[in-house]
Structure formats: structure tokens, C-alpha cells
Image 1 (spheres, one colour):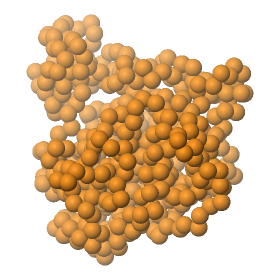
Image 2 (cartoon, rainbow, N blue to C red; image 1 turned 90 degrees about the horizontal axis):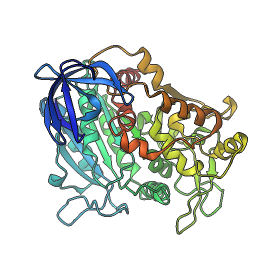
Image 3 (spheres, rainbow, N blue to C red; image 1 turned 180 degrees about the vertical axis):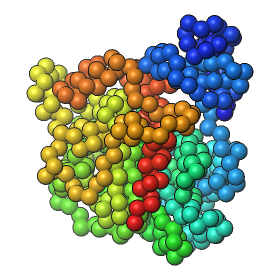
Image 4 (cartoon, helix red, strand yellow; image 1 turned 45 degrees about the vertical axis):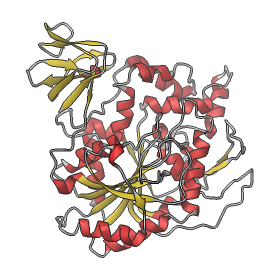
Length: 456
């Protein structure tokens, strides 16, 4: 596997230890060939070391692995991009705008894919479904599950095709894989470091998605592939849950109006997987809640937060959460961590309206408040009891930084966000983001998802 050195300078060691003999030194941008990984000395909270093709070792925090799907068979490399982004006249997705389009666009992609080569056409639901049906007609019968995959937040605009590659590589290479194709939905989820209007813009984009009837495209596809015994499933990661919330609540709580629309959804998905959901835990509260816009945009709108309608869209809903996902605490701090409060009970009171679902699950909610029929999965438990394997297969590991763990415990117990620092994420780019990013592709999670797909 190809690796790229991401530190200014890093030393190669004879053994996975900082006290082992130095065998070479590499500078930023050096390409290395990674053949495996082992546990070694703990450095900056990370104890995974990569073994190189020369038999020596580099600390994993100094290397970024390049997801390479080129060795996969063609039927496993061919997937689809659904673009909910505006496009240029020549069909290229317009990555310079944050406003969603009035049309959906569609293009087959062969991984590894290059953004510059993407040329998407307007998505016609009949042609769309027929193209996919034909593409899987020769696949083995056990590969019967399709995924619509909605990505999360992005600091800089892109199509996030690296996440598609990572998902495909981790699932398609599993011996029990039953996934046929992935339909990767790209959307304008970018913004600056401040979330002043990013949440609102994302919710509105979701509302427009539903208002334009785009769910009907997936409903048509689901019916067509069902004729051949195949199922359509939905997977949403991280900040994509803000878009999803708008999709589910296209007209609720606008400008303080708490009356609810009577919009109901038809059953489209067999399973819905919510991975590291970057949204308030109150989305799983009975009847949801209309939350004030803490950082009001120009329209000053408040939005209803409610995921109960997922039970109309899908037969099974699974929520994967992790208490020690540091990145999500940094995200939540934008809402509740900058208040000038001293007493713990005052801080806890502020967070009543916004604790991150991806960290808390339904923690801090009483059972009678929680919507029934949601399957909550604690990723920490999965990883602890997961089958051993090559660490390259599941980069996600329990947090090993004692200080970071203590900071998270203070947030959990006292809503004290004082120690949570976004700079820590930047300085630990190989640790906290990967802990969050790979949550849905680490081996124990992959195995749990594949197991859940087998349920009737």
C-alpha cells in the first residue's frame, strides 16, 4: 500500500520503537511502500507503526495511506456518483458554489477516480434505474445490497471521492461482502472553520432536496432492483446528518412556526445506517424539537430536529456512536462551549438542547423520551470485541491519549468544553480525524454492517 510522509522530517526505525536504531530519514512528501502494521511505542497518543517493504518501520502518525482500489476486479471498482451540486456547461461539478442545484446529476465512476474527469448528466430516474439494473445483472446473487452514501462536512470543497474509495476498499475486500454497488451522493457540505451558517445552509439544502421530489428517484430504483431480489440501503456519515435532517423536515418550525407538515415518506430503504452523526441527540427524542439557531443566518430561521421519519423511509435504522470521537466534541463546542458559565449545572443546562448524537447516542435522555425501534450501536464495544486482523484493515482504535480522554470525560459529565481545542485536531491530523473518518470502514464496523444486512 502506498504511503506519503506528512511530517517535515521522520526517522525510519529498525523496530517499532523510538529507542530502536535509525535506519533512514524521510522528508515531507516522500513516498513509501507499506506492507503491514503492528503495535509499537506510543507516540502522541498513537501506537500503530507501519512496516515498510524493506522490513523497517515508520510511526503511523507520520504517514498518510493512499487508498488504492486499482487492484480490485472491475465489477468491484465500478460504482456511481450522484451529484447534488451545480455543474458547469461541460458537465463538470461546480465546486466553487455552496448552493445546491435544482437537478440531480449522475455518472458512473471507476475507482480510483479523478475529480477532473467527472462529467455528469441530468439524472433521469428511468434511465438511472435501468443503467444500474443492467450493470449488476451479471453479479453473483449474494451481492444484493446497494448503498446510497451521503458524505459529511468538508473544510475545502471537493467530491470526497477518497471516502468512496475507502468505503469500497474496506467492504469489497471482506470475504463476507454482500454489497453490489455504491451510489455516492456528493453535496455542497463545505464551509470555513466557523459554523455560523453552514448548518443552516445544509438543512436548507436537505429541505430543497425533498421539496423537489428527489426521493422519488430512489424510490423508483428501489422498486426496480427489488424485482431481482436486491435491496437499497442508506448510509450517512458525520455532518451529512444536517442535510438528512432537512430532508426529513422540509417545512417544520420555519420562523418560529412550530406547526408540522403532514409530509409522509414511502418506504425506500431496507436499512439506514447513521455513522458518527454530527447532530443533536434530540433528533431521537419523541416528537423531536425545534431548536433556536444559535448563530443566526440572514434569514434567522429555526429548524425542527427529528429523525423519527426515518422509520417511514427505512425498515431498520442503526445509529453508530462513539463517546471518544474527539472531533465531534470540537464540532459541538461551536454551539454550547463558548458560554461564559462557571457552574457545572449551568453548563449542563445549556447543553440540554445540543449534545452530539455521535458521542452520546441516547445518553442523557430518559427511555420514555426516545423514539422506539432505533438500533443504537456503541462502536467502542464493537472494536473491543472485534476479531483481530491486520491493523491496515481497521485504522480506528480506541483513544489512547490519556489527557484527551480526561477532557472528553469532563464534557460528558459536566458539559465543560474548556479543554476541547480545534487546534488539537490540526496538530494531530493523523489521529483524531482518522478516528472519526474511519468509523464506518474499520473492520469491526464493516462486519457489523454486513451482519445487519443479513437480517430479514
